[in-house]
Image 1 (cartoon, rainbow, N blue to C red):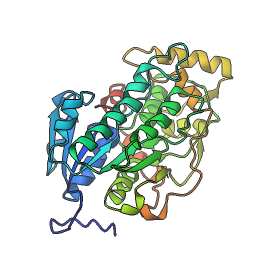
Image 2 (image 1 turned 90 degrees about the vertical axis):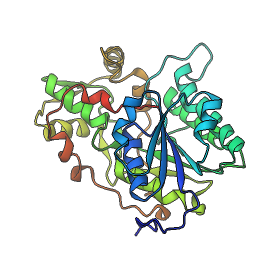
Image 3 (image 1 turned 90 degrees about the horizontal axis):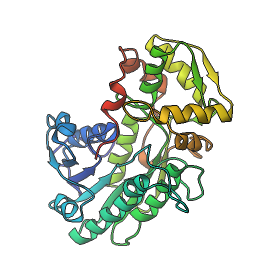
Image 4 (image 1 turned 60 degrees about the vertical axis):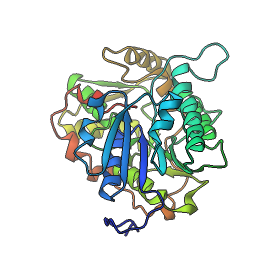
Length: 331
């Protein structure tokens, strides 16, 4: 039991929720769960077509808006009771001299949470759930993780807003970029040269991430806490890539690369046609194991879903390269 049974008679403190980043991979799953629990949901989007798939859900509306514009952000919060921020990017411009991360990471991960909190204060919204990342730390080896740490501080910058922060491991599920990318590469390449092959990951199912948000939203005991979200098993990257190949029907040898060659490979993937598949900063992130320190907190009431129980349902289908970009993070 979740305590959020699908009934319009359930008394909720936050019946209307603004989900920023709600049209992306994780957001689409979360919005569907919120809709199923009779929340009224608003999803801002840069382009109407990006969120069209959400309009079939009950109690969901979309709004074309620039979430980085303070006035538009405040307007989006009109009539809302709580805000969920899921915006995140995996790739961005290099840092300028002396900076800890590039302008893209700063804008998406730090400046936007600051604006969201300011808009919450201005409109009287007192509840915010914020997406960070497992391994976020001000002294982390990658721009991505350093900016995520600063984003956490930005999200908690006002005592007037009750904040819950989530740090998920790499997330898997239908529409994910991670395993779909490796399945697609195995379809195209006879051998997979792999940087960071021994890096450790503890992937978490997207449905479990969405459920964590649902369970935390109305629970006041989760305010002020940072929750790590991870699955039941730890894998090496080599194992995950091999599994993606096997399940998708294109198993090929995986060859681990030494650090120098791994960096060269990352540079080429960073400049791949159609957008980066992987970057040197991603490689830097893998210097920190993507593994949780503790099991998922009991108050979130989640039994983590095994990767093997879900992945065959979507990777076994015919993979094409367009799938890798269809659900990349949208605002």
